[in-house]
Length: 284
Image (cartoon, rainbow, N blue to C red; front, side, top):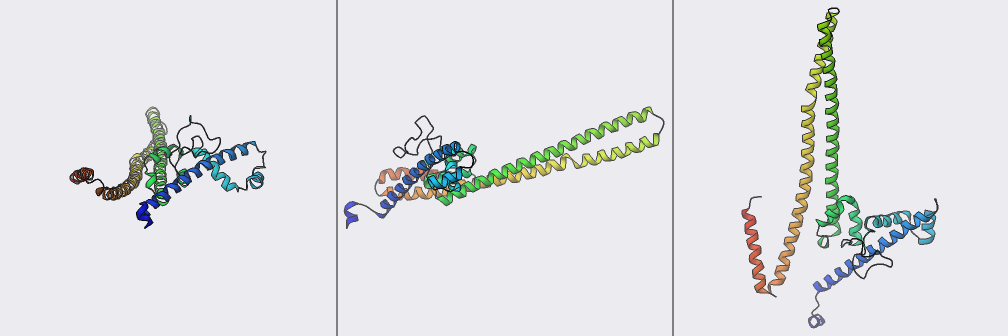
């Protein structure tokens, strides 16, 4: 009876709980950044060998916990708190860049993404609708794609060095062969010996040419194509899962909206149907 008079529903209560939880984690992140800042400051001030003792006696932290908090500060410490009213004392001023709307758990998971790629990676995600497991999976897929790319680049470099070395050997053998041919024309003595050496160098030169660029370039191309396809497959899988999740949320919101604003609902329903019809006609 109370629910009927106040209009409160389990769905509304769940939304309030999730909001409070998210705000709490943002406050936790802001606090973790400030603790990490002060741990970094203390470590620089302490004499050599006093760090672990100070942690245990003064703040009751293990070295592992302290390192974790300092990593969070190093990654996000140049930015202000996640939301107004939640910043700890002495938080950075407004001149710093805005901190992404992250919870403490999300911020720590995102440390698995290289710093130079983290901002772009965050921009590609709908963090508010992702679970911790989904975010961990996305980070793992990005890490795997980066590893595949780096491995492909490393193999490309090695193959290029091999091709270059073999090219240098071919140049050396060609010069030796040319030199012997000149001597062979100028000298009449030891003709048989010179001719034999010319023959051996010719065979070696032919062997080097046959084993070099074509095979190496083919193998390099295959490796690069395989790495490219793996990276593209990971990206397509991520985009597909995001599309399915967003489409399900759209259907849910439209269903909720239909009874309250039928005319507006009909407008957006027609737009959605038109969009889906065009998508079916377009060739993927």
